[in-house]
Length: 375
Image (tube, rainbow, N blue to C red; front, side, top):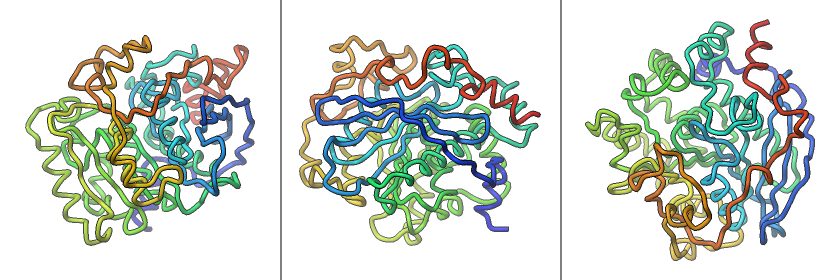
C-alpha cells in the first residue's frame, strides 16, 4: 500500500464517488465578477451548497482555486467573499463551499458555529471510520470534481488555498490529491506542535499521520507537481499557543529540507513580521505566487506586486462588518493588509443557495451525515 493510499484510508475518505448531480441556484454580478450558486452531491445523503466566483468575460480556460474554510468559516465570511472577488478580478475562478456544520450546512443555518468541534461529534465520526478532517477533505475533493465538469476551467491549473483549519485542510489536500498544482497553506504549519495543539479535527489526524511518516515525507507527497507557499505571521498565538516559536522553526526547517524535491522556486515559507492570525491567502504575496505559477489572465505578475493595499479593519468598519471577537483585533484580522481593488462586501442572503424549506434538511447537515454513516 502506498503512503498516499494509507493516509487516505486513515482519514476515512470513501473509495467510491457518486454522481455530483450539480444543480444551479442562479447567479448574480458584482461589477465585472460573476458569482454562480451551486448545489452538488459529495456522497449519498450529503449535499454541498457552494459559490463560484469568475470573471465576467474570461479570455480562455481559467485557472481555478478552491478555498478551504477555517474554523467557523463558510462561504459568506467577509474575508472569503473578499478573496473570491479578488481572485476573479485577476482572472482566476474561485470555488468556496460551506463546510459540514456551517451556514447552509448547519441545522439552523447559522454562521460561525464550529458545529463539528464537540468531542461527541468527533467520536461518532471516528467510530464510523470517518474522521471529521476526512469529511472536510473529501468534500473539497468533490469540489475539484465539480470544477472538472466545466469546460471553462483549465484542468492543469487547479490549486487550493486555506487559512487556519483551512490551512490544515490544504496540507492534506496537497498530500492526497495529485490534481492540485498549487497550494497556499496559511495560518498553519508542518510541526509536531500540531499533534498537541488544536481541536479533534486537526490534532487526531496529525497524531495518526506521525505514526506513519514524518512531516517532510508528508510534504513531499505534493512534489514536484505542486508549487506550495506556506504563509504565516511570526507572532501568531492562535497556532503558536505556547509562544515558543517551535511550530514556526519546525515549519521553516521542514520546508527547507524538501526544496530539492520540489525544484527551484516551487516551495517556500513566508512570514509577516509582527503578524498574527490573518487571511494571508488574500495578500499581494499570495496573488504573486498564483500569478507566478499559474498565470493570472487579467493582471500581469509585475503589476500584482504594485497593487495598492488597504487595512482590513478599516475596510470592515467602513462597510459595517462586525469582526468576530477573537480575531477582530489589530494582531489578527483587523491588522491584515489586502489589495485594494474597490471591492464591496456580499451579504449571506445574496450567496444563499437553499430555499427556506430546504434549510436544516438531513442531506445538508452534520447531523444528517452522522446518521447516514452510522447506519
